[in-house]
Image 1: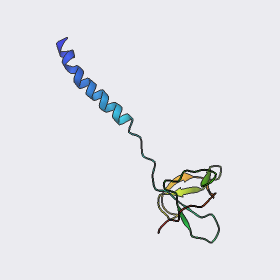
Image 2: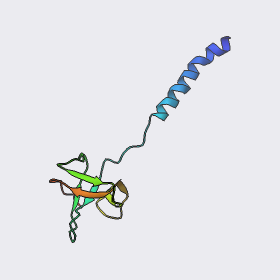
Image 3: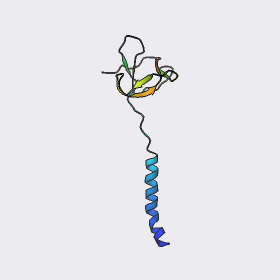
Image 4: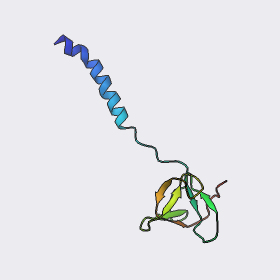
Length: 95
């Protein structure tokens, strides 16, 4: 009985560490960029810290395209899927 009592603090520590690892979710990339949808333009917008909405931008998820990227170039990794729709003024990305 005493040996089980002596193990309780160690078991609590292991359980706490396991719970901390389980709650450590993957980060959503904070930097995101989108290319202007107008044909013939190579303008990129910095969507970092911009909340999608009717006055900023939206990603139409019904269209199978890349809405935003991790870097301001079309070959970088995808952050959001869908068609990029610009609804208002957005900050330009510095290349």
